[in-house]
Amino acid sequence: MYIPESVKKTETNKDGVVIAVGQGTDDVPMQVSPGDMVKYKKENYPTSEGCDVVTQDDILYVTGRRCVSPGCENEAMPTKKYCIGCYNSIMED
Ligand SMILES: [Zn+2]
Image (tube, rainbow, N blue to C red; front, side, top):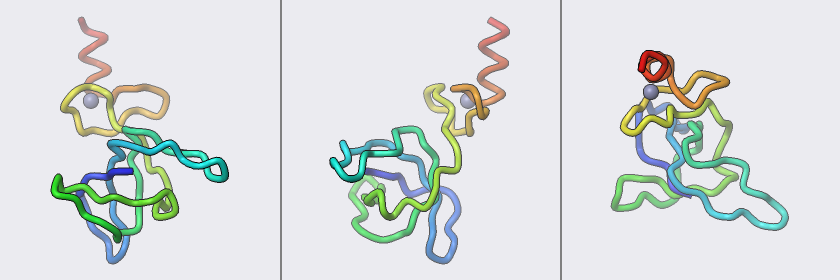
């Protein structure tokens, strides 16, 4: 699982966005997917791309979903794939 370095840092926990996941295991199915915004424990293996590689155990909780519009970094509305700004601009087309 890869999570980009981003946004705010707390003492030990970080916010990030999942950009890739593995398949999980038979015992522990993968419960997050790319685009999930998560709070996770900072540790493990920073990569050259500026991402942190963490296991599912390091993820504390999912804080939201990122808007699916390319390049948009806003959080999506709870029941939508898009943030309010992208959603409104799509509706206007
Ligand atoms: Zn958006």
